[in-house]
Length: 236
Image (cartoon, rainbow, N blue to C red):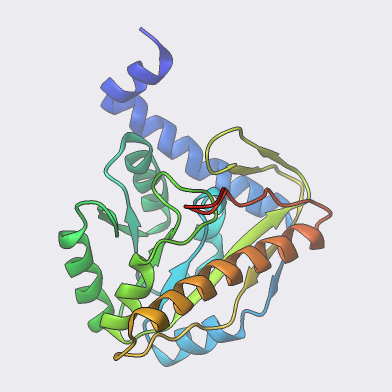
């Protein structure tokens, strides 16, 4: 039996792998020299107890638990796929709760759960290119949630000077210990309650453009280059 299948069938192996993953994240953060760019918007919303949607690309999940103020509750939208469940168990070691589902596939229950959390004053986290891509292209689900909940979207990302980019669809960035690291935040993106189709598309594009811009900025600050977004749907 292959390793992936053994992990999938063994509750103990899955738990151990996720625990080791959380230790690795702590190691990378502890041994790195980290800075934060444009974090004032998040700080202000945290201080005021106001909810928002944290947006980040799927390929930059690894260190995002360390971008968050630990005392502030957040619920991350995680897919029901095997890799999503591994991510959910890993981030649970940082006190992060998860919502199973997708903003595009079978996501009605997840949508209701996220709206409930946001309207009760808690934050949610969404990877708008997850769970399966296309890479670094935002789906419209995140702006639909923001419109219905009446909360801003805050894009965020990280980069490190030492890393491995996997050959996965999302070009997953594995940060390495003893790196220079940076968390870069984008400006808030607001979606009007009465936004029409054109306004929703403009907001979706704003999320996508902001995330790609701050990813390029973060990588440049630590001497790295950014992977290219996947071809847009419908592109020749």
